[in-house]
Amino acid sequence: MSYDMYDYVKGTLVELNPTEAVVETCGVGYSMMISLQSFSSLGKADHANVKLYVHHTVNQQSGEEVFYGFYSKEERALFELLISVSGVGPGSARMMLSGMSAEEMREAIVGNDVRRLQSVKGIGAKTAQRIVLELKDKIIRGTGENPNVVDGNLQAENAVREEAASALINLGFSKPNVDKVIGTLSREYPDCTLEELIKKALKIL
Image (tube, rainbow, N blue to C red; front, side, top):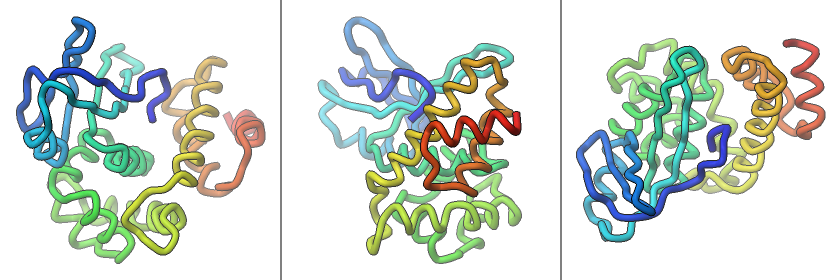
């Protein structure tokens, strides 16, 4: 989930194309960037009653806000794992989720299939290797014996990381620095409590 109050938008699908969906709710139309994976699912859904899970970003320099919409929580969780990797931005993560399904993505990461990840436009060898290195254990640990679902343990870990980052940003630290430090500490201390994570981050920032 992103560092704010948005979790999902539910309403009427009023516009749909392979890269964008507009959902109207309470008289407001929310424009959201989507992957081909979500586009395919939305095409089969009841347009009068759709629900998209949201990842909300704000450009710290321009103030531009962007909503990324996902048909399932599973896809959003994988998107947020991907953008936690250095060198993988929201655009690249969306491209990856458009080039292969969430299941295919997990299989490639767990199976060390760097070449398959490189088949996505914009993903080079080093980035693909970094994705496998940083996410393989998280996906396996988060799914137990079945690598097809990102479970509550991983979601809880992400929630702690996000809450810590939000608190640090509110204290006046820049988001890029906070993201970098929290990402590093989360990998080194995956079982850290919220308070411990913030204290460790404050010693570095």
